[in-house]
Length: 193
Image (tube, rainbow, N blue to C red):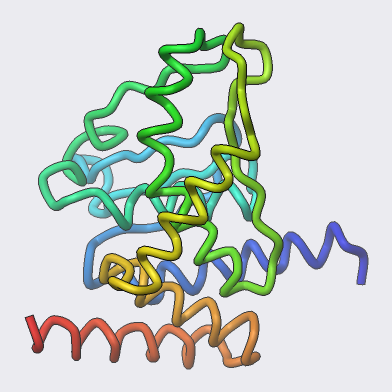
């Protein structure tokens, strides 16, 4: 099987798994997008909230899922969680603000990526900006935050999905089995809360 076909199939599995775990419980779907990523809350035309990831890329899907895992209930009712994204071409101060806001989601993204048996790369996302970007320093901050999550625990939706991803991509469970594992974990977590 070609690597392009394998990547497509894994993206389809990822979509199926996310939707299995979260479509009923959180009325949220993961959707392959053609353009830039965006989070869209449910509206008159759509019964589900939608996490739209960029260009069908696996890494984009995990990144957008990570933002969703952090967003609180109120934020999940707002387009893009009510945040304004500053695109490429950031200056030093805008880049620092971007990186500060990205540490936690990228730490979660790294946990999810590793649960898929994949290699994680931080994103400083400022290819044409004037800011002096230190990718290695940012990677250290992301890893430190991931280590804190390992000791304190990931947010509930992130942990449930991490377990599902590990089941699907590492342990070769079916999407249904891996999804059931995440659902069971969420049920236990909600009962304990």
